Image: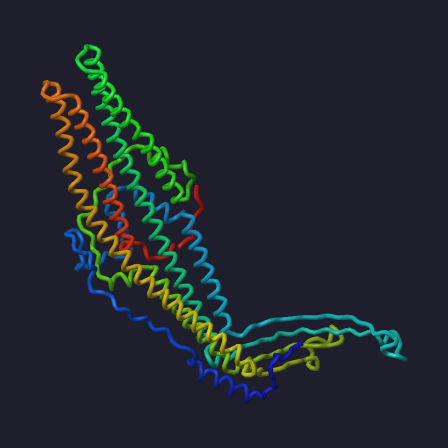
Length: 494
């Protein structure tokens, strides 16, 4: 049976109900609470650190669906990033949160339409003789049958439901931006780790080549020592330097293995899955000749973490309206139609018809203290999310300025260390020639070879830092990252 709400309910005539429905339509555009307005923040026109010749600020940023890593021309890197964007577990978690926000939004939208329910009941009861004295046993038996359908519809006169749906849409937008931000992080981690692996392999090659060279030097010194031409001190020095160079190799091999393990896990695979594929050495890809940084205004439009922060501010602002709507009465239109009889055969006959239409009014004006407390809490939450948005913008600007200066200085260091590596290799070759001619001693040869190793290792390490700084810069700019959400749920790892 239909029960009225806890607040006052009154049966209305059809004319009154029509008037109420007309009022609901007339007030359909009214929603209490503040409307969301994008905050206006003062940002510089240009990046302070975008002064290097290979950093551009005038040309428009590339299309967001053009993945930057394709510019390195490395098919293996492209495949690893594609696998990570499909099977990475952090992305699958972010996608599940996006799905959850969408599901909650669909639930909130259902509040805009009537809630329909149906019920049926059949009962067979008997009263006791004490309850019905003087009544025969047969007459104390009673049967009852009822079938009905009911509907309830909250008339959203003051926008509580609309504000709640608005907040749900903003939550979905925030989850979508979180997913895009996760894509930025994961793709950046894959590219950065891949470059670190190739850099470690280059340093391994340098260490092994120098160890082989110093092993040849040690053989020569051993032969000269056996012939009485070099002292035991020279032999000990040559052995120590060769052993010191060889000792670099196990540590570099361990770091390379860790990088391969990291890449496997980032692509949703067990740690050992890519060892055979990635173990063969490959050179670092060529870096792009120019990176377009755009302007701080471009950054605010492109960074997904900024978009997520703004969407959360939008949701918090809408929830102020949800709380404010409790200051006003809530109207609920309810109706029931059905059939009730004491014999199942009499159901749906004319005389068994039941119906009820009522308008319930629920107004919490007597509980105004709690309502205003909820509004104050919503206001405070919105103020906090505004501060979080402003912090996100400042951190994004800081992140980008840091990435710009690091990449510019890494380029300079790369150029100087390349020259140092070439010069030290030439010096080591000349030292060997002069040593063979008897013009210099063994100590000069060992010193030249040690300098060569240090210079070549430093150059290989600098090349790696330059490559990873380029990835970090792209990551900070959020340029060249996929903005669309996956059409299908990521598949499980193989």
